[in-house]
Length: 255
Image (cartoon, rainbow, N blue to C red):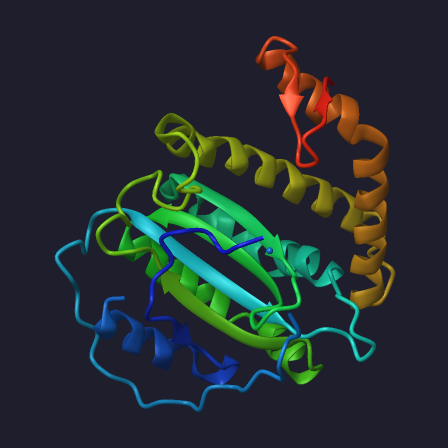
């Protein structure tokens, strides 16, 4: 699956011990094949933060967690749920009232990016500053780094000409009205997924950290397999009047 359109071209590469340093550099700049072995960016020196003309307007921000495949080439997809629950959930709870739109994005094709979990949110720079700072300082990122799971944590911004448009990160191939409304749909879906993750994680709090979220991933995979047809597809279909839908294989189906 391709990355969302509108992604910034000047990412901030942030090794764990240099999160705040590189965030300063980011502000100055304004800113689904076989995966090669990624290289870490070298720490850089702090620079003065320079605000742009959109210093108070809300815009789109991306927190990217690029993750290493297992030694056997498998994807440790449980790490997405771990980061969502242990790193991002509390940040969202603290700042959610000031974030207009947010969502998660998961992907792991065999390409140069590979396994990447993203938190994408629409907020003013002052709120984004706090979200980025608190996320980058989370001790769990240091552990994931030390354990060889976290390849890179970085911050991207949407295209400067569109970052203030709520539709800017929707798929450009969709009709404009879907681009405009889709962020609300995926925010609700992401909120529900996070709630399921948190509820399942609470059932396994006696397990070691990684085993706990492997159990969460297995449980949610079962929920999706057993319940998606009615809980998700059927009720979404109902909103659109139970009309047929063209699916990826171009078969016509109803739910």
